Image (cartoon, rainbow, N blue to C red; front, side):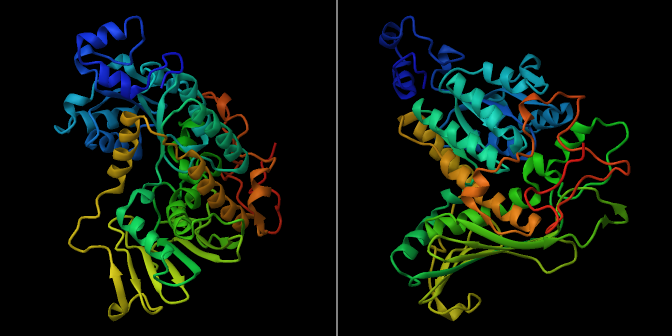
Length: 467
């Protein structure tokens, strides 16, 4: 909503159809591109990787459209081009992709140019590596734009503190903001949550979560090509660099952590952990990234309840992808095999493989729906009905406690939530000042290797940066 107009977007969209509206809104900067399309919400995409491209498709699929993509920004020309082609060449979306060359921005400050193509009440999609989230969100608030941002929204304590401050600013401006923790929009999990609250498995005593898979995305990386700029390389391979993404831990494990926290109706206050790296080669090629390849974390809630988390990215190992809730009278499957369908169910015993003990399962004859689409239905409905909708505080807490567990593993220390939030060691304090062709926040040594965590040796931060 534009603060200066005194009109909600709902009022503007409702009024825009007739001559009376034209008279009533005379002199007002109405956020349309074309008068004939006054009901269309415009989108700008900042960060044109796979998740950003998918988010545009989810928005265009929404029952609460119509939407239209009008601008794109990325620092990687090939990535923006591929995203545009994939969307434009899909007949489902072609007519709603209106991004000429002069609205495709290949530069670090392209996010500003893309947002400048929108008007208050439109939506910017922030799907760059999360290190840039607070920078881009700051400008979106300044412009009065609604926002969809991918998770995690912060990769360390200082960035989380910035995001919590920006959350307050966005609420004051009545902006609608969605965060890509789509499992929170799963109707199956919502029903399970209510059943747990109603005592279906007794008192909640333990949560367990597992994402034990092979290598995913760019969690492991070979040495940088000699002809590639350092910053470009790290942004291309952002899962490999803690400053850019929080590493494979933050990007991959946050969903399991967050859905467990939903069932508990709380976020943990402390974490202790272990982890390490067994292999530094993949198919005979040296890997130089900063990630561990296995993590085991014990999260503690204020009441003493534990969440036990295991993560692994190793080829050839047993794979598990699931979250469970254990109670005093039984157990529950929060999710199993994938983010959706979640396959939620409850048991009268504690063996979640015993089909005879199932006491409830989400209506097996009913489609659970795609939570990636549903989160957009919810965001756009809030925009059109002008109702409060802002997921940034919860998304920041999820990002913060996720990173808290990662730091516990990387340092070998017990990490408390409040201490971590107030940490004085940001990964990339000048991320808003980065310049393509300039230095990156972390540099390789003479052998092309980057600093890695050293638990028990480096205790107050996750790695040492050599000057």
